Amino acid sequence: MNNQSHYKPFDNALLESRLYPLTATGISTFQVNVGKLCNQACKHCHVEAGPNRNEVMRKETMEACLTAIEKTDIPTIDITGGAPEMNPNFRWLVQEFRNRNRHVMVRSNLTILTEPDYKNLAEFFAENKIEVVASLPYYLEQTLDRQRGEGVFKKSIEAMKQLNSIGYGKEGSDLILNLVYNPAGAFLPPSQKPLEADYRREMFKRYGIAFNNLYTITNMPIGRFLKYLNISQNYNSYMEKLASTYNPNAASQVMCRYTLSVAWDGSLYDCDFNQMLGMTVNHGAPSNIKEFNLAKLCNRRIVTGTHCYGCTAGAGSSCGGALWYKTL
Image (cartoon, rainbow, N blue to C red; front, side, top):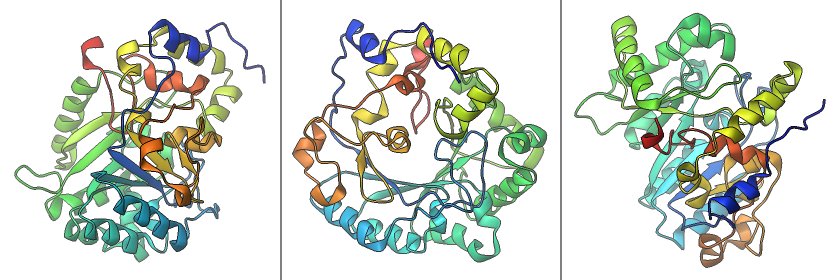
């Protein structure tokens, strides 16, 4: 498949916007990918997670993460996967981070909460004050199932009702439920705030469900989504769309500047996307959690590539949604 196009290298875009070389501004989020095992195999998944993946973080690596965190005041732990809940040491890890007084976020596909072996997960989340960040690409059944698999929508609604019933997403509660929107094709997400209003209205009207925030995330041209772009012959047009809407304001706020990502095997990355491409931390900073050095990692130069246009196009994209609302 020919992936040649006419956009400039990403570092050139950074250079023109006086952001080259892109560097970290510190670490406020410590992201831990505990494995690629998942009960789903979504079409847009950049991790290419699924039921047959055997990359699972071992307890030894988790202990190295805990040792590293103890040397810092990094406030937020972001646990992801795959379905992170399927790691056999998931609950132990969550509790260990909470014992160290860190705020813990878990990125959930929701359907795992409905599986027989995981049905008390919602209560576990609540007991540990976990912020749940849940994938819900759309609020209509047909659209969502086309992207994530048949029956996923109904299970997702069941899981959210379960979370709502114990206080998640409810006004006045400290139990946070955030939803994540991904486009279903080769286009940028719509404006985050208006879409959040649509979700809030429709989710409550149709299903009686409440949540805290909606995050819009651009589909990255890696993993299964890259395969889709190539098969559908949309790669070049999609990349040109991303590059042509490069936003320096979004680029200055990309999540890699304040996030450190740990892979299932302990390798260190600037972000979860670099992790899936095997682009480890470089430029003199340690690339494994066992060699953790806060000073070097807080000031490291970010490893960049063509895919970085995905985080800097339009309003920008991060694990926490859009980056620059003034462009909307």
